[in-house]
Amino acid sequence: MKMLIPAVVLALAFAAPAWAATQSVTLSVPGMTCGACPITVRTALDRVPGVKHVAIAEAAKQVTVTFDDARTTPAALTRATKDAGYPSQVVKAAAAK
Image (cartoon, rainbow, N blue to C red; front, top):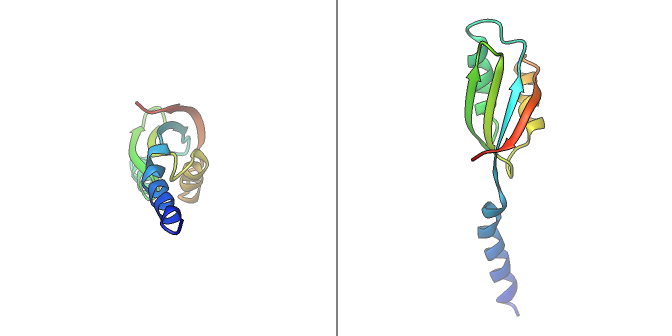
């Protein structure tokens, strides 16, 4: 019995990443109006734990972020852009392929 509990805990620790899914969200960032703005937004998002990729469509003023949903959320991503001075809102969310 004493060996069963640590074995179960260890198995769950290795299985936890399997529950995570890669998600993708597109954020509207209307405040990106200059050449330096996308750099600031990208840096803020890259610092969020779980972010895997940031793609910026500067002309559309949108950012697509691919992230690990076990480590972060769309709310955390919008908070990161807001804290960097660029409020954003989710315009599209989907499971990444």
